Image (cartoon, rainbow, N blue to C red; front, side, top):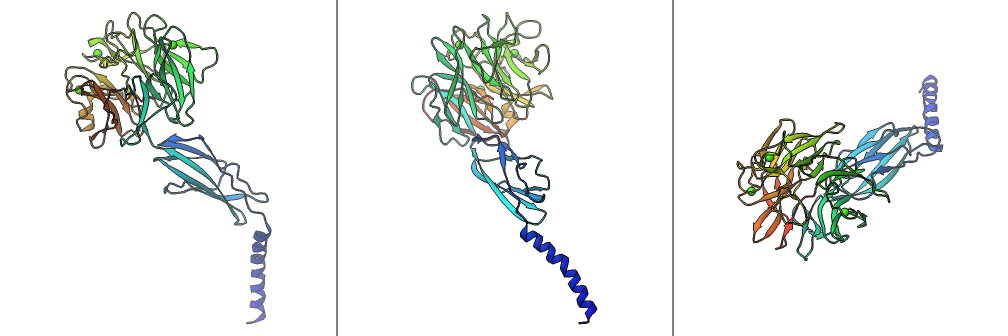
Length: 420
Ligand SMILES: [Ca+2]
Ligand SMILES: [Ca+2]
Ligand SMILES: [Ca+2]
């Protein structure tokens, strides 16, 4: 090898050696991984990962990779200040791992464990002689009761995080609102005297509840902020008098509120009741849908709540998770028989029997009522009268039309009314 070439090779080698030395002597970056919301939530749950605590003490982070731990493709990037969202679709315990790399090629990792619970249907049963909230997985397994309150009705799951359940508890002769933490099993009670509050529904932001109350001497829709303060500040929302308003249901995607009223267009609703909507920000509600039958609140009339109007009931409408449709109960004559579940399409402005919508036969000659649209969007739970004074919770898969029974006890089971 001649000298010139050798010298050139040495020169070439110097920067490489220096570069390697710099990597050898520099400090490694520090990976920090945080996330919200914390806690245990039902699937599907969207987690926002915060990588911004990651840093490099003597350089910069030039690359990061976040493995979500659920078999999906990892996310990657260069800027740790941008939050990363990921939706966990199924029950499980997932270890999410962040790896960061600095400008010297050094790496560090940090992990968090995300616990995701199975979606469940909430319903009430009087199998023990009083009304109690139960829940069951979508395949009918692991039916269990919620051991926080006695005598509860009209359960309503909080949208999005689905970590809290609002309901109505019987207390000293009238009904009060409750909120139960579904994983800590702690409860809060909104103790109003004299009047009844039933059928709570969560605002999609989780910081407000609407409900039906007889406080105005007439069943109307009211609201309360959540969490509520020591001084109970409930506000009347609707004024449908001399007609009634019941069964409020907030949209899962915005502040729109659907409810059921005996008021129709310019007088009484056709058949006894109609669906109304109060779009968020509008000064007043408007009639949404009024077929020739009862639309919305009617159910077989268990008489759980004294003073409910004869045409009213405990069954509430249920929004699809994307906010485009509303499932509700109707006895309109062109159904399959008795009470049926119908689907109202907000864009099309039309209603369709659930049998046609699902391609199956969830509606039968018996009474079906109190629908609940499962969070995944592909199934609707409801209650069917199976005879002998017994009601069971069923579920129809919307992509196959398959119907299966979820609840198992041979006793009265009512509102699947999971509700928001
Ligand atoms: Ca009360
Ligand atoms: Ca009607
Ligand atoms: Ca029917």
